[in-house]
Each structure stands twice: as structure tokens, then as C-alpha cells.
Image (cartoon, rainbow, N blue to C red; front, side, top):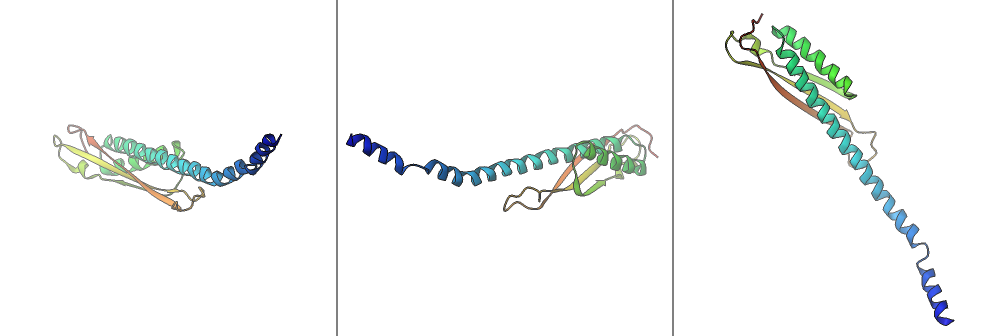
Length: 149
């Protein structure tokens, strides 16, 4: 009978330790989860910015002059960012149109750089910046034998 009583008392000493361990582990698990969410948001946002730059460069390279290329690239970048569901605090689209002044038969290209500032302040993770600037750039060749204006 004494053996049974000792075992019972030994079990009582560990009573509640599981709840204490859970309370100590819970904040760490939440922080890891928030870190995964932040990493996922930055990664998907970076992919959206790269896609916008690639599509905008392609749209710009199909135009016949620098003005039309600039308009087409800007519109395409904004449309793609909207389709991707990316909300930027600020957006900048830079399009190089110098290739449109090259003579027919010369190699030329246009480069589009899209910059987007993504808001991260809604992820309540200590040490995480409130916003992250993402930049994507892509160069697309202009048809060497297409008439340019």
C-alpha cells in the first residue's frame, strides 16, 4: 500500500507541468507562424513585382516609339500588380526607351524596373520592419527590323 501512495505523490508533483510547458511554448509557436506568414507575403509579392516587370517590358518592346512604349509598359505593370492582388504603399515604374532611337537593323532593347513598397505592419512580429521595398527588372529585345517612329 505504501508503494501505491508514493507513486501517487510522485505523480502529483508533475501535475500542471504540461499546462506550464504549453504556456511557455505558445508564444514561440505564434512567432514562428507569423514569421512564416511574413516570409510568404514577401516572397509572393516579389514574384508579383517580377511578373509585372517582365510583362511590362514585353508590352513596351512591342510598341513603335518611346512614348507609346512608356505608356504601354506603365499600364501593363499597374494592371499586372492589380491582377496579382498586390497593394503597394507606393509604386514606381521606370522604362528605358533609348532603344527606340536605334537605326533599323541595330540591336536594341528596353528595360523596365518596377519598385513596390509592401506594407508589413499588419503582421505584429517584433523586429519586423513596417514595410519592405521590392524591385523587379526585366529587359526585352526590340525587333531589329521593325520600323520605329
